[in-house]
Length: 198
Image (cartoon, rainbow, N blue to C red):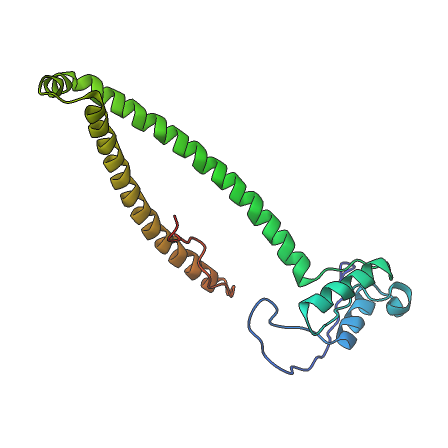
């Protein structure tokens, strides 16, 4: 049904069934017939020409060269898969910098919290420190004792949080995969990954 209220039926032939984002595609002749009727212009191809063309190359490097030639020599806009990947990589780099900044800020706040906790622990344990000094402990030994204690608390907390984050990532990956499957989006890669170097 066109915006002007007219209705038209077009006969097409089904030549195959595909799954994914574009389950149905028309051949150029059918697209042209629909466009001529829609715009009420039987000469639309001669007046407007084609809106887009898809060029296939044998490799990604060839696609880049052909894309540059189309853009520079012919004056048309062109895009390749590499262009799309470069844009996605740029967006991912920006997101990575932002998330790293948030992580560094969280690390700074956590460090202040640990320092505050250790200072309070030292103030509350002045008698213990006094007894250790009376028994002959040096300042370095007492400092080492508190540093080892703080390190073990931090290590234990880090291990627990990494395990919790890894488990939460597995759960979120499963939820996202199920959602995409319900929407018939063919993405099966994990979104949240805990790498060994973390």
